[in-house]
Image (tube, rainbow, N blue to C red):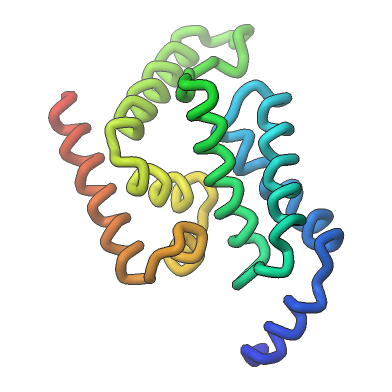
Length: 169
């Protein structure tokens, strides 16, 4: 196991260019799941790395989590500028099984509707866990919360999703 001192030394030696090369695809994937069309996601990703470059000397913790935290804020900025939240768009209009596509589309729309009924902090925590497959400590770092606070937040989010889903049945 790498000691904390060795990890900090390695992180300190990491340059911005190294971080950008290593983590750009992760950040773009995170952003593009939340921002459409692709060109807008590319713009937001560029904003993330511009902000990261400006604040590189203040970086704390693991680089990829720090970058996802910046991305989260830039996505929120983009939503505020747009005033239009996610709209579900089927990805394949030429699906042979149109009934299957309809069912999938309907389920996706229902899931998004439930997701947007959650408070923003619960929605962010849940999407980081489900879509980004981050652990609770990683989510805590991205959100700037404690482990216990993040765990409680996720429990509240899951409970709220369960109640909304039951109410909608």
